[in-house]
Length: 79
Image 1 (cartoon, rainbow, N blue to C red):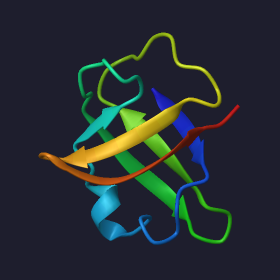
Image 2 (image 1 turned 90 degrees about the vertical axis):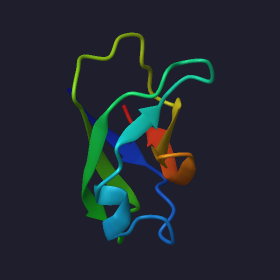
Image 3 (image 1 turned 120 degrees about the vertical axis):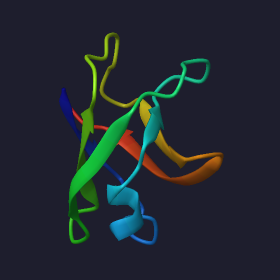
């Protein structure tokens, strides 16, 4: 499923983020496989596409991107 992120920091929205392999929406949630795409540096937005359906997400929640144990960025789920 695809979601639009807002407030993606410009310094973190780079080509390496496009390869994000895992995303966490909730603090205790296991990381989910996903890809970040359509990065718009002018508007600080991007699209996240999960490999599997995600339930219980709401606008305003944070999405944090990881590659291995390294946090490579994040954003806020849009409406």
